[in-house]
Image 1 (spheres, rainbow, N blue to C red):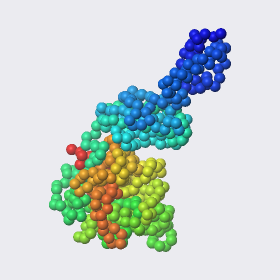
Image 2: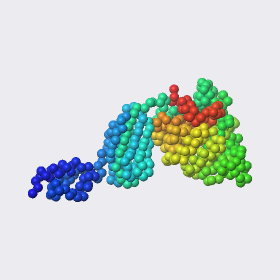
Image 3: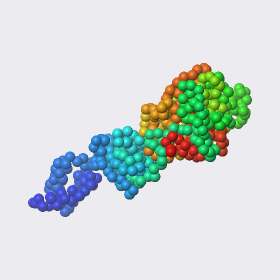
Length: 491
């Protein structure tokens, strides 16, 4: 007969097992040390204790399942790691941490046997960014965070998996003038164009035009015009729904491909596109770049509508517009078309590219095209997006490395509620420009008001054209630095 002492000894042995080993134990124990009755008694004791603390043996859960029950963690310069499980029985693991100063943040999710993803959330539970690699590929998030409270959410995409979550944060160098809301602030042509010439800011001039011209006045374009810089000699590619090249306020400023003979059915200049006299249509695979929407024509007018005493006046009213249609008349398109459009613009003489468009995720072909543009000295200006999010959407999110992201303000220089914000990474070259009730050209000779970061971006593309008309030798990096260093938040 076995006494209770033996059973308790075996219980203590079982109690030291982790959940995986205990499952093996439950599957069968052939120990010669303890008879079966002791094994059964010890197993019973262990199960009773487990039941008393309501612990799921197969999915030990140390993280909270909601924002309210998030696990409080502390992170610092030395990486700290947490191991847990997500799957069909545990779909959300929340962690909460606080930072006392602006910090360079790093997160890695490793040890995955199935597809799990991770998001970084602000103090209200709104997503700041996420990492969503496929299969069991590890996830990572890096960036600069302001002081405050944040959440990390780990969740399964498919299947169930254990994971290791490693986090660290080190005190960051605070960049003067950078705001997580407005980035480097409102662009300023009087300072930026002067900066392109290494001169002091241009003197103020009288307000230009009437009430509909508030955009060019808010960005101080007339100050650059007064010094003779109007975008002359600069080509701005408009990657959009096309452009009404016959509009009276645009016709004089439309780029044409001098190496192509119209309508002869030949690729005269050997660039791979037949009869691309007025650019190319990557949405439909032809040379028809006319705008059947209105979006692209409105954008083009903000950049380069003529200063002719009627209609609208563009920020760089002597620049030329290269129509590159990457969106259909319904406003839809593909990342492949956008990437091809960027490369077409670069290869065919554009100095600036305006992209008042966005998608839901990053894309390697677009990233590669942006890098290509930068390497060729072509500056890409991208709308930040209209979701009211805490950071720019795609492709503007790539402005940490290439080009500029642009948010929208109203005529009082207040951030538009719809505008995506700058985010907490000061490497994000984000500025603001007029984007609420902006007056510009519309197809078939029309004019009208539109709102969006799509309307803000062309103000900045026009400003870049002014800078390049003053100094054609500026690189992408130099333009990005000058525009951010002379913007409204910088002293």
